[in-house]
Length: 149
Image (tube, rainbow, N blue to C red; front, side, top):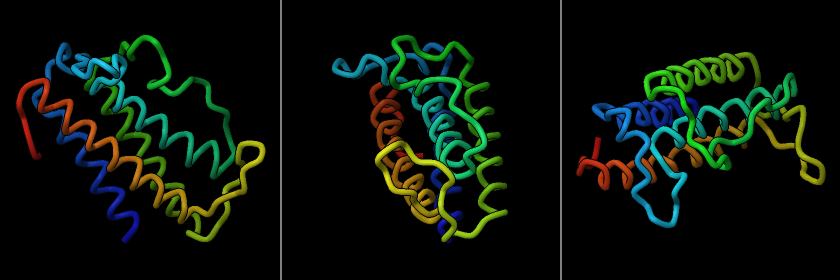
């Protein structure tokens, strides 16, 4: 059930991007958040999947890049490429999920933090993705008036 909810949230990210031009995907219509664009949010969500499932849970790799939301410049890749990279990362995350148990603990956590279970990570990713879907809702409405799915 948890994976189903996470997959639904993930699929909705793509739906929120349907019909956007490259220029629209890079608009930052919120004056107080100049780095908040559709393209940046998609890149951030891919980064979050990588960070939680491969870096924290598996402990098999380090993050080679910073969170796109923390960078001054938005990602340069096309929106289609960003969505494809996000989709591929989600497939990888689901492979990791299928090979583990929800009560398994992550292999790595930042200094001073307790290790959390895969169940905690999945629940957090549902929350994280849903929160950013709300941002995508607002951005999309401000960009072209599109609401809902």
